[in-house]
Every structure is written in C-alpha cells, then in structure tokens.
Length: 307
Length: 311
Image (cartoon, rainbow over all chains, first blue to last red):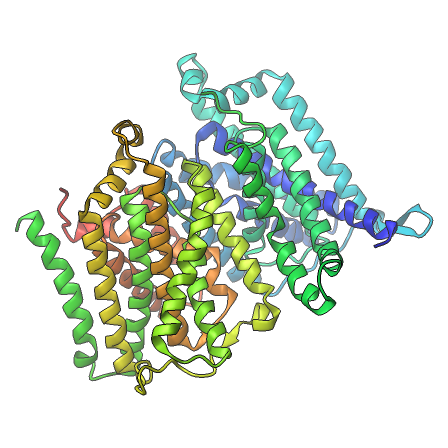
C-alpha cells in the first residue's frame, strides 16, 4: 500500500467521520438530555439532502439552496418534536421506538412518492469543483476538503456553544440530570425543543453537504443512522466531545479497514481466501471496535450522565 | 369471562383459525401461502416476546438471528444437504450460536444503550451477509431444492407446508408457555419489573437474561430456516434492521408478554400490509402514521381491543 493511497483514504475517513459527527452530535444530545431514542434522526439527514437537491435546483444556487435546506430541516425537526415526540418524553423506550420507526416508514415513503425511487443527482458547486494538489502525485477533490473543513468548523462552533455559553451550560446540565435542571427553574420543554430542532438541523446539514458526493435516495439515512448509533455508544451518551472523538475514530476505522483489510489478510492467507474474508472483516470492524470499547467501558469513552 | 379463561381460550381460537385456513379457503394457494408467511414470522415474534415482553429488554437485532437461520438453510442446501431435521436443526443452532456472544456483550448495558447495541450488531451481521460473495452477496441465494424427510416432501405442497409450520408454531408456543410459567420465567419477568430486587434476592439476572436471549435467538433461527424453505430464497434483506423493527411492531401491537399476542401481531401486521398495499404502492404512508398513533395512544392497543385480561 502506497503512502498516497493511505493519505487519500485517511482524508476519506475524516470526511465520513465529520459527517458522522454532525449526525451523532444531535443524536447524543437528544439521548442524553431527554433520554429519548430517536430512530428518525437518520431521515432528518435524508431530508437535508433532498431539501438541498430541491432548493438548489429551484434557485439555481448551491449556497442559497443550502440556507433554505437548513431552514427547512430545522422547521421539520421542530414540527416533529411539537407534533409527536414531545408526547413521548418520559414514556417507555418501546413507545419511542414504535413511534419513530413509524416516522421513518412514513418519511422514507413520502420522499419516494414525491421524488421517486431513482437517486437524485446534485452538482458540486462551480466554485468548489476540481481537485487540489496536496503534494506531488496527490490530487484530492476540493469539495471534499471543503466538506471536512465545514464539518470541523461546525464542531468547533458547537464546542464553544456547549462549553462556553449559558444555553450550552443548561444543555450539559440537562444531559447530566434533567429532573434537577427542571427543579431549578429552567424551562425544560423549551430546552428540549431547542436541542431537538438544532440536532435535526445539524443532521440536515450533513445530508446537504453529502448530497453532491453521495447518491440522494430514499432510505439513505437508515444505514448512516446505525453508524451514528455506534458513534454515540462509543463516545458515551450525551457527550458532544465523545461523539467527536468517536465519529473520527469510526470514520477512519471503517474507511481504512475497507481499503486495506484485503491486503492485510493476504499476509495471513492465500489471496482468494483473503478476497473473501477481507470485505467481510472490514464491514464488521466498527462493530468489533464498539464491542471492545463496551467491554472495557460499558458507558462509552466520555459518559455524561451523572450517577 | 375470567381473565384466565380468556388466556387459554384466545390461543385455542387462534390455533383453530390456522387449522381451518386451508379448509375454509378450499386450499387457495394465495391464502395458504399468506398463512404460512404469518406463522413463520409469528414464530420469530414469539421468540422476541420472551425477551421483550417478559424480560423487558428491547432487542432491535432480532432479524439477525432470523436471517442466520435462513442462511444456515440456504448455505447447507447449496452444498447438497436436503434432510429437513438437519437443516432446521442447523437453523436453530445458527440463531442460538450467534445470540450467545451478541447477548453476552449487549446485556452488559441497559436502556437505550441496549437498543442501539443490538441494532448495531444486527447491522453488522447484515453487512456480513452482503459480503458473503460465495453465497450470492447482495443478490442473495436461491435454494436448489426443498428439504425432504425420510423420503417424503414436507415442504413440497402449500398444504403440507402449512400444517408442518403450524405444528412447529404450536410447539414453540407451548414451549414458551411452559418456560414463562416456570421458575426461570418468573425470575426473567421479575428482572424486567425490578432488577435491583431480583439481584438482591440472589439471582444472577444477567445469566437468566442471556439464556432467554439465546433461546429467543434459536427460535428466530427456526423461523428464518422455515421462511427460507418457504420462499426458496435467502437474501441479506432478511437481516435488515427494518425487519427487526417489524418484529418489534408485531410484538408490541399484539400486546407484549402474552406470547399469543405476538402471533396476533404478526397476523395483524402482515394482513394490514397486504390490505393497504391493495390501495396504493405507497402503503407505508398510512402504516407509518398508524404506528405513531398506536405509540401515542399507548401500547397494547390491539390486545386491549380484544380484551386481554391483565393479571
């Protein structure tokens, strides 16, 4: 394996990690603050991608489309929270699973009914197309670098927001002990709506960023949702810092595993067996990582919940 | 009618219903096949009810064990094995053998962690199935022939298939009844109600749960194996997390913790899907909100309508 390939795959891994972080950040806060299992978080990601595709096509501008898509994703999150999820806080997890599973079925099908089953294509914006020479012999698409940069920027913003503002303090307090925060006079209902809407917008942002490089299709949020779950479990429920570390870890392990497992297996077995075992092993790697982390720390790397 | 009478009458009615399907419909292939599909899924749902209903552990990876059973049958069939007891036995074993390590890791956790981890392991096995390129990979695998038993062809005609699956469903149901009524079942249920008290009473609750998890995995494997024989086809879709979700929906809508509720739930979900699909290909637009309403209204909806007595 060459250094160039390793570098490219590391960048690809970072890119997946950044997307995962944007999704997992909202997910982990919703879990942590509200003790709510939201399976429908993945469809928020899908909606973000569809909104971008629709608005960018309607306005002819990627930037304007992105702004509108973010607004629409936020609106969707808030409406969903007010209409359905709000009534399920404090209920059995099974009720939450049932309701959010129903929401997934509905929204996936709604998207299929509106836009059809065929993947939509979104152009990379003119200004960000092309490739950048990172070092001799290493070209990397500019848009993907922008994506990584935007993700890291949002991560930094989120860190400042959560660690250094009053509202962030309340969110952290909520993740640690929601009942106590409520007893201290914080309007927890409004805090919940805020966290949920913001989480939905972040997931939508991830979907919108991913739209030009992945295929926009119904159900695209389902698989990435489960990777985001893995991230949340590894990072520790309620911890944004944990989600960040775990997202990059999962992104890198998954991407590098997929590119190099077959070559690594060749060291141990003959090449046809390696061609069989490599992909199988690669697809299991992140889950094995999760099992290992849980075996050592059942509450994740950075548990937020008190007691 | 007293609650206990209802508790024994309803299962008998359900059983009688399945016995009568081929007779009432005159052996109509569509109806009998529908009944077979319902019974296969119902077997898996009963397994899930053991851990979800009685143990109060929301496992979101049940389809993985279902799929493991299906793949066990599919893979052995392609290698020329046709003995029904061998194939079905292998299916049960595959489900149980996978449930053991997955349960051992998952049961270290609680609540939302448990849901997410079982979901993640289920997805892991899904991707493993897609990467089995020797056995069809993404496309799945057609069974070369159906299983035989002592020179007979139990899965050959819809009618004999129907009664074989019905017999197995009855066996699983009765076995489940015995299990939940036993000391083991009472500990499992008590652990779902008040874990700390059960631990304080000196029961190693995690070990009890692990055994229940493995049994549920084995039952799901059996169901998957039968389903593979039924469709003569196995694919990674059998392990998808949407299918795990469907199993949960079946158990929950039928009413958790009654075993026959799982059978009713399986019938309800499959029939509702079939019925809605007649109106529109986008039937999930109706099915999804129905689930949301059921969750908002409180669970055990279908069961409450049928007047299931609370102990």
